[in-house]
Image 1 (tube, rainbow, N blue to C red):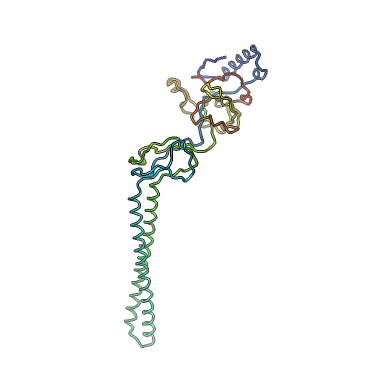
Image 2 (cartoon, one colour; image 1 turned 45 degrees about the horizontal axis):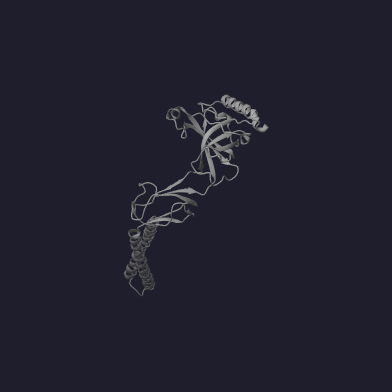
Length: 315
């Protein structure tokens, strides 16, 4: 039988609808199990993946030089998706490398001079102590060695700064490439070679992570108290395709009320308060179950045995 959607649904209304369906099924000689089947609540939902789709923007401004992947392709974590023109960043790396080598050479020369100055100061100090040398010459040699020590310390600091500058330049060079953060499928590509892009210019790629599929259902406020974590449920395709129903269980229930995102009628959507309920499938769903697909979720221990067309939430 076809049920005309009403809003809002209450538990008593669902029970009466089920009773009517049961009587009709009994008259038609349906299976005995259908006459005793009941569910506690019903809600609209959509198929999703934990965390949702990934929208990736290019990390830096620049001109797209190369695109390594195509829509529909499966990529692995760390795989390069696209590259910007790297010439400016590579020049910065080359300059930083040259600066580091210069700082290293300066430090090496000062180290050699310091060792010689320390050796000379030590000999003059020994001679002055033995009365065979000038004490002033020994003091001057000691001061010269200390001055070289200060210059060497400054050279070491300059070398450390050069290393940091080189690391920063290499990091900026790496930012000219966009890599996949997880194993995923390329759902959408929105850039072309030669295009000027920026992090604020919108996503360059949309990725579907290779994660477990879930259902995000919208529980009407009248049903929130009847649904709990771990509760069994049946997920039914809302497109009328006749696809078999799938068993699932409640993974978590939200704590914040909000407007319905799945209700198409703007008047009803403005007055409806729902809580998000996330369900996990008991078995891996078929590949035909796509992300974003709308479904009807029937909550209850016997929901999976329900026969015939599902009752829907008020619309």
